Length: 121
Image 1 (cartoon, one colour):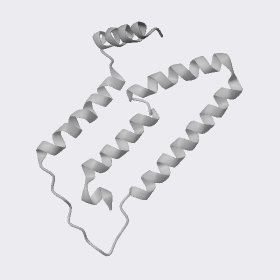
Image 2 (cartoon, one colour):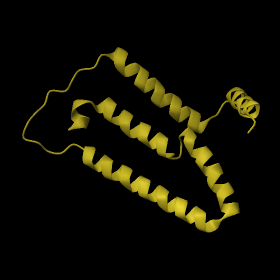
Image 3 (cartoon, rainbow, N blue to C red):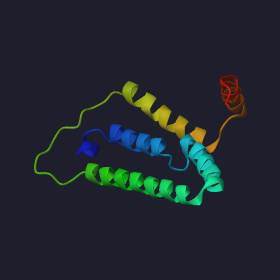
């Protein structure tokens, strides 16, 4: 039902959730991949436990996603018409998140590396 009333907001929740759990093509995926490769060098059993935990999180996400898919309903609700001024920022953020997952600009990389180094990590 949520998809039929607010499709852009529904996709925002789905894409935001995918970005947070670290699905490929999102920026968080690379940091999780680096952590997992270092963990594989340290301990394979711990890596296996972490991967099982990731599988549980992905299954929970799939369960929530299945529950939000529109069901046939006897009652009809009128979708709320959202102006373009409210849709545009969400779409810009979608594109920005995916672009940062595919291409990470060198200047931003240098800035973030400088911040991490100044923090002492």
